[in-house]
Length: 320
Image (cartoon, rainbow, N blue to C red):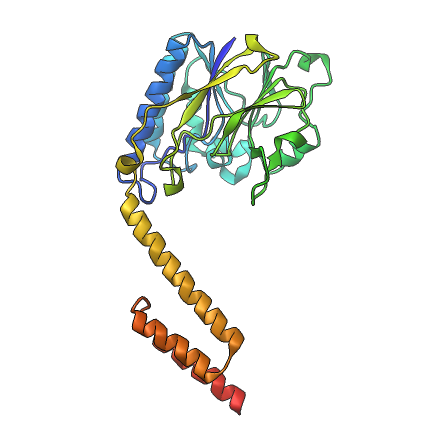
């Protein structure tokens, strides 16, 4: 069986900060490329890893355009299914998809989308689908998505929206080595950076990264999809294919973003000076620092005067 897997589309009508192209149009073109690729690769199924929209209240017309593109899959005999992410749900629960424009995916004819209210254990064929929910990391860590009865014996793939990573990150996540699962393949979304196909505890973990490029940090990232051939198991079943997209300088206003970063750095430096001043104390210290900041011309004069006023007030109170 051959599967095309992609994840984290984050459809929205307005462009993210620093994007200077038409973000929505760029995403629709990527979807068209994905549909064409699925046909060219003779895929049996297309799986989506969650966060179809950037907000449950995204543009209905835009989402309908995206669904129109995906409808070509089922017309060509390619099954489509998706795990919903937190951006697709109101209240971070699978039931919240009903109040989201992501529910428009259900109008794709003959789709294999899991029921919204089922949540974390929808099974069809050899695939289990787990929508995002607030407890998803604990569920993975505790092995609650395991297949202990006859119904689940043939499960090959777990499709899930959850923050699975190769190494620690500074936000809630679970490393793949800590996942307890009997699935042979886990396809995961949510972690936008993605990682190469990786074998851990007998399971292949696959995340090609987000289709969306929403921040300047993504500017040089080339979106990818995974083509999975289950017949290759137990060897690596996946290959990643790059998606056509605009180069960084065409998609992002890199110059403006860099200028803003420098401004942020200058503000940070000023904040650090004030912290040093507070820790050191003494009139000469704070006056010298504020005088230097005034001469640099990088801090608004009104801010400097307000800082001077507050420092004098604190000094007067300390001298009383």
